[in-house]
Length: 185
Image 1: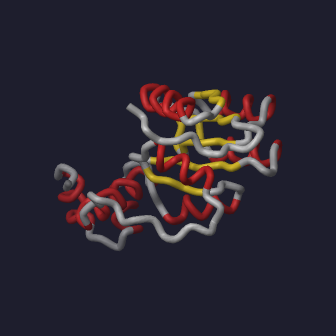
Image 2: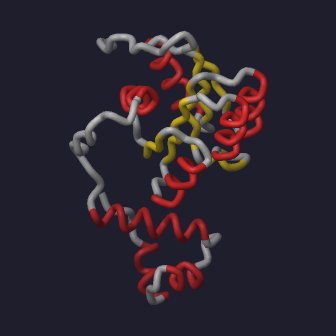
Image 3: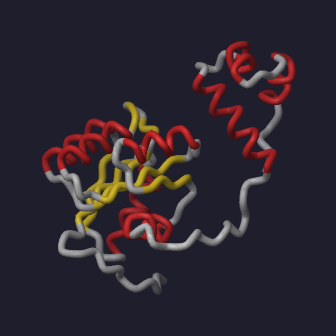
């Protein structure tokens, strides 16, 4: 049961959710509707861009990596269509460089998955006057953060071990051993 009071969304509670994970998208849409948003969903860059042009919402939550492209394209389109929109970029691939890029092109905030509806609402309605958030109850271990970083660079190098090792200043065989192991908890 949801015990959260409805937040003050202003005169326009329209919200665009763009994510290619259909289960997550539906679950987040239901949770945001319960909080008073008027939700419209899209599962791709093409669909998200079309909605942003036709009916620019007051709020948006956009996944960074979508099957047909980069969610930042939707952010740019929405920002051009509606300058006052509050946009949160949501991704499973948290990196400082992408967070900076998202904010530079108009995102209000950047959240790493997993994030629940309360995290999303806080980010959408933040005024910038809030203090630092509480530290997470169960943060990723340093080994897990390192592994995630290596995996991200490996993917960015099109799964080329030699190029990844060069960019990480790591011996190729060491990298191969790391990639062969399961992810740490």
